[in-house]
Length: 551
Image (cartoon, rainbow, N blue to C red; front, side, top):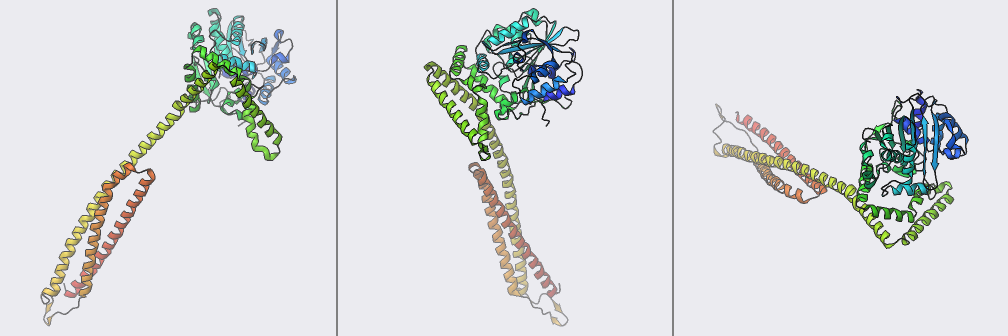
């Protein structure tokens, strides 16, 4: 895999100038990601600025704002890009006091009066995460949603594309449904990149706008999406994107896939690389949605307020930082490499956060505590029903299938053993009959009428026969016959008890039983071999007798 993000690869590979006709999902993702760059820190007079995309990228790189490695790669690509050479950024607005919100407009400048409005997602601050939590219950819009709706309402572009990642995606979708119909008519298309949905009450209040979203909205989610699938699913098309977690956020597990720079482009570098939603994402989505569905709007509000009181949003945000809770334990493994101070600090920080959390929990009202317990209990029940029970049922189905298979095999073995027992018994009876007849004939010939055969001109023929050997051979054949009869009875007993044993034995017992059957089969084989050997001896003696008797 290339070290560059999919966004950077796309910007570097696409040299065709952007216009309203060739605008695509990768342009939408690029500009949504660009909105995260803190223009309010790059330009003191940002509200009055109009700057080309390439110049903005150069100015951001030259500033002292904090940038990740993947952001720098994107800005490097944009600074030299032909794709956005005619695009200008203006109407940059940000609010970081009462709300965490920012947006900017990018004019395509192709003569079509088309603009792209990009909304910034959560920036990791406590204020931003507080607002995200409020999406669970706020029925008339959060402060960020209202600011975004006002921003869209004031746009004078004839054709508008909306784009946003995370909360930015939620904001542009919400702004559309909250806007007047005359504004909605000017919106050509909306791209939402892993932005969450809304609560039932909000959706009902703005149902007219939501009814128009089908056909205008495309939702893109990473394969293991959690954040984008929270609350009600957005209307429109759903697309799942193949992601590979970047090194910067790898410790965040599946949440690292929320990072837009982890999203892959296809081989042609023209679109996002599609894939299927993972089972984990589907399970988590259903667990969280089912849990929220069992809480009333007021209960959701109180739960969110309780979490805010416990400083959970602050723990998630960079100020508190949940990133360290995930990341630092990995560093414990590096103690041998001299990072003892880092590990010690991490342990102290995590212990402090846990202790503080318990102390803040005790400061909640009894009603808030009860609601938190109810919510946690519901989460556990949903997790068991959605994740554990299907797994148990699948295992039981698998075991039942294996039992039916083994039972079928055992029934086949039983039938084969019964056939074998009949064959052995018939063979033994035939041998018994033939050997008995032959022995009687031989004994009669030897002791009953010695002169009946072999009379010649010179008188009676004389020949010697080892009578004792013949008697011993007859006795041995009879013993083989009795052994075969005993084997036949034993095989029948094994066959009759086999099905009963399979119903009460575990798999390993069945295996042992099968081993016993195989051993019995080998014993039968040994007996048959002995019988064949005896038959060969019988043929030799018979030939000798016939030769001696002149037959």
